[in-house]
Length: 436
Image 1: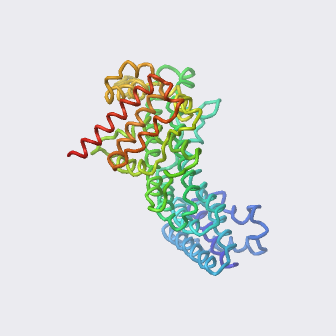
Image 2: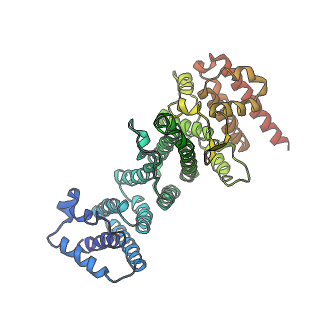
Image 3: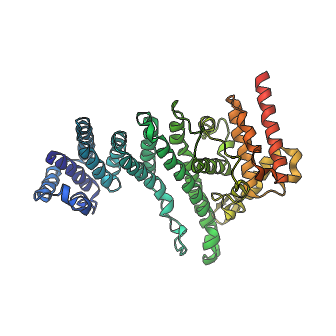
């Protein structure tokens, strides 16, 4: 084990040499591992590691760090195969400590190798790894000071593009290879869907933040502020869309069927995901645009999505009308405003108005009923139309019936009339495809 500690110290020393991080001694002095990791020679070993790295180029230090991380991971896996699971547990814990304090290249290597370790780890450590990935992915949103009551900064920094990409790659790889641990399918799906909902709500909070701070800004700063908010929101929406990649990878496992006999909690998470996909127009992207990959991914997700309306759900109507992932301020805010210098170039309609127009285009005969619907109901109907069209295209139209089994929803006259029209259009689409 002393060799393992020395190798892990090399990771810390390499990171310090490259980034001159003040947290370089975190591994040795972390009180959580002081009793099991620290030895009288640890500090001397760490200092000798730093001395050994002096004179090497940054590229050489990175190569040493990446190789060391790989060796540590392989050794831990060998110990695991030999029945010494404690080594694997300790290695995961140590690498998790280094994940956010290492130089970006080393951070990517740690994230990649943590996937291999997570696939053989006990459930509690698997959850730790998945949660650590989520925290990094979520950090760009939750660290935004606009989420606090005292908003004093106008422009905030998001996590670097490299951080997001490497964590997303690790999340997707973990999802793709999780058929080695089918007992953890649900655990990881809940983690990903929860992260998706959190990021979706955070986007709406940032997009409406100008309502809270613009009163304190001078008039000539408003165009710049709004442009920054728009740019940040668009970046966050792209991040949210990319999170569908690991969700798709997880749901495409042939032996995983979350759409059969799933729990009420998981149904709520699925419904929140689809609400957000509709809210941010993921289900209506251009077939040949830069986000064209979204439609095939969503089509696969749709085939594994459980029925989102249960017959015995007593609060179905209120859950739809007052969805927790649709912010009232965002639904009634201007969706995008572009500025150049002090001149407003383009102002789009309200978010809710755009969705209402999309729904009217689908079922134009119900225009009068649509005008009386709440934002949540409009999003629900668009979700029903888009998702069930995808399912029908895959030869799975039977789920349409489930939307009409809940007595609570059936009492909503305007809503049920629109639901019937949506179902008719989906069936017409299915018949058209079958005949052509």
